Length: 317
Length: 280
Image (cartoon, one colour):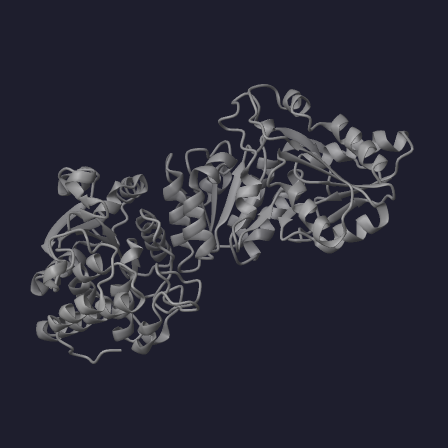
């Protein structure tokens, strides 16, 4: 198995902020909107450097999404920023009608996704956002795994014409991907090749998948690790090629089992090549207050759960 | 354009509305008839537009967003007569495969429509965004929006109203179709709106009022609104209208908000509306 070196620990939201800041310098059509969470979304640098292209909308997310749709008319590329819960569930109909159905070039950038938001609790820990967004026609759904990849994804989506949902998080997590790697929307990243089981992960769970793979290797199991940073459109070819080799799959995500990455993989496998699958995801439950790591463990989506799921799915082959 | 010519156009638009909704036995004739005079004046006399070379970006031309998307028949008829597409296409309204969806949408590429509307309350935010882009592009054109009075019950309208005033979005002219009617009945029975003009004033908007069926007054008010742009405040026109205007049995009731007339009723309605430009 390939060795992964942790360059540092950084939050993915800071990767978004850095990417946005760079876009501010390189693309004059990029504009940004925020609903009173500029600091949390790390949008301050963009705001300070380009005040005329930054729109503070206050605590009014519906208006923010509608304005973003309008800003595209005349060629601007709006990036909206707020927590994932307020970026999706709160404004689903605004996104559906004014952005997705109208096919507007809006980038919905969502921080504090999932359980690792931590102490604020279930009101803010959205676990349904990937499902909500992937169901919308025209919508691309991206969930990068670390700071470097989030920065690269932020830059890449400005070049892509169409609605995008970009999901990232709050805590500092291992930053391990190549900072110079170009982000390719829709292309799975095979992190490590193996033969016994395919572990498909997204977001923060990609590093957990790497940790789990190191444990599995000690147990004599050789996993293949795939980082699916683009949940929609899904890189079906890469997934099917890997499964042809390993004949079983574990998915891992900081999201509800219903509607998440695992659900997309299950649909693909059921249609193309029925294969044993175990999903590491939150099982039809809201979260609660606590530390991120404690919550991942309590809700059965931490490293040990991936290890257990891999062993189980191999036994089902 | 002379007032008489505008009256002729709005008469034809009203005929189109009645024929379109009758043909598919669905759609929203009441509010459409009520806004026919306003949209005629706006599109044929007030807005600076390029119907023959429609672009989504609409740079250096005025933009219009129909936030109360259910009155799509009046918009489609006005767009067709103004040259965005051939009027024969009006016969496809609400039929499968048509570019003229029940509620307006750019999804099938109909010229003149830049955003999907129908789920209410979203068009003012869209208009604000488009107006901000015009400012960034140093484009001095104006953005117009139209809203139902019942639509103002949606909270997003007031989020947008607050934003536009606080941020001096003064290249925006919103109009409220104040016909006092909504699907379930009279506005004041469903959810009273209080003093609309004072509400908008309190939110920091420049407020004008007009009779939406008196064409000279519509012209005068729209010109005044234009003169008020660029003064640091967004502008709203409270437009008093009658739902179903022009067809006697449709006026004074909410019943024709979203129901189509029978063939017989349509014949009666059309006998009251002069065919001036030729039916589609």
